[in-house]
Length: 195
Image 1 (cartoon, rainbow, N blue to C red):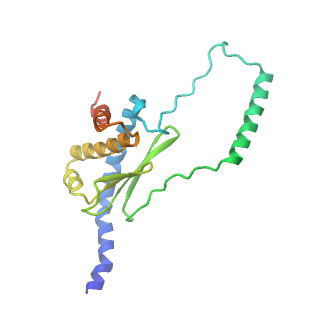
Image 2 (image 1 turned 90 degrees about the vertical axis):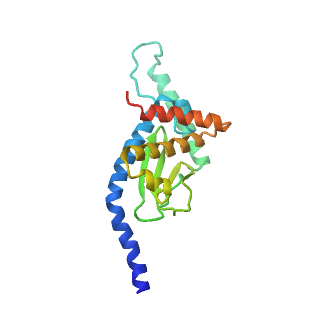
Image 3 (image 1 turned 120 degrees about the vertical axis):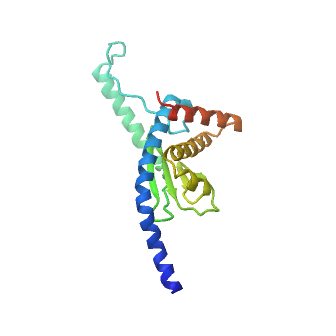
């Protein structure tokens, strides 16, 4: 009987997580969008590589006019430099999100050239509340605080936003804890206060 229970337990856990995963995905998407807007308001808090990219604006004046021949010559030189640079250095590998369980919820916050991935997964009740691996933020579903806060929608959004802003502020490597807390507080305020 013990062997049968051990085989059935993962299947039952996956089925019980199915309904909760839909709610988690929806909430995580909303929170990531709010955090993204807060980071756009505070680009100096963005970690390296997450700085927002500006919008393409058409040229309206002639002040920066360059003749076609100079433009073609410059583009050929730039292309040659890029080809030489690409041969010398290899593309850096991006960190890959590791699913510990098949029911993990993964969402990505796209900002600038890179992004931050958020993975909500079962890490055990004794595991950390959250941790960062490169640009991937792992949140522990089994943590007692997560279990308590996930019962109410508003408290759950605040909890997820707090963890995300905490880890994003730590990615910036602040000089002291006070600076990290101030950055997190400003990001949370900009993300959660409705205007």
